[in-house]
Length: 233
Ligand SMILES: Nc1ncnc2c1ncn2[C@@H]1O[C@H](COP(=O)(O)OP(=O)(O)OP(=O)(O)O)[C@@H](O)[C@H]1O
Ligand SMILES: [Mg+2]
Image 1 (cartoon, rainbow, N blue to C red):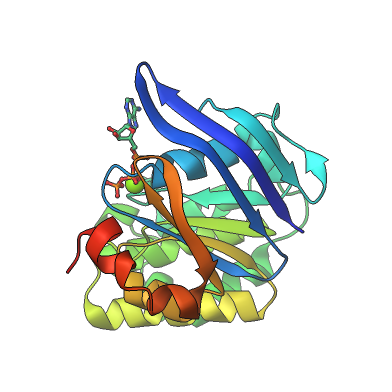
Image 2 (tube, protein in one colour):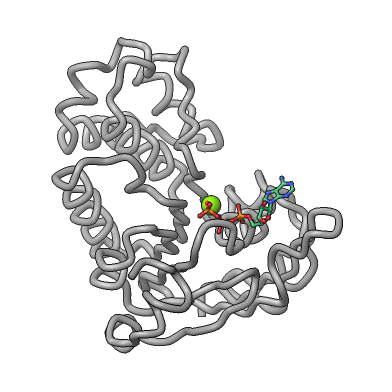
């Protein structure tokens, strides 16, 4: 087991945003966390990444990392691409990529070249400020930057937000390719249908509780998913 999250609680004052959540991930799995706005999805990911205060236990590859700082978790291979991407808009595309490798001592030139091969739009804009990128290009940059940290587990918080249907498709193709190369992926998505198609398993959060979990196919056929928990239909 690569990730074993036990009894995670996140509280913001009196707001109990994540309530004793358990979640496990095997190496090479894609797992999705679904839930309505405010269900606690981002809070859960931030707790796992160490950027939000929480109680409970996080085991990463069998090691208890609960007390570790966020940068230490990144160094261990636990990387979060946060909601809203958070690229550095005043830096160039190339500088943003270099930032992704800041904790590495080896030469990442070949990896950056491979990123430019994969995303010609980024290559064409390598010396422009990242603020000129479209939403889809920013998302590709954010994921590429995260890849340069050599993650073992990548957590993506609503990567498809604001993307056109074609770009959403490209994004999921990328997610599946990265997974095919051995990356374990924890994915928050509004796009329930696409997420469950790519994922092996899923968890559904409602007001901080896991109300449903299981393999993606079973969840997809569960009528409670849309009606009761996500309020989508
Ligand atoms: N920094 C914060 N301070 C206070 N309350 C917060 C903070 N961040 C989140 N919350 C609250 O915690 C609850 C869960 O928020 P969270 O962002 O985890 O939900 P989410 O499932 O990611 O929602 P969304 O789909 O809208 O992104 C919400 O009630 C939210 O208002
Ligand atoms: Mg969120």
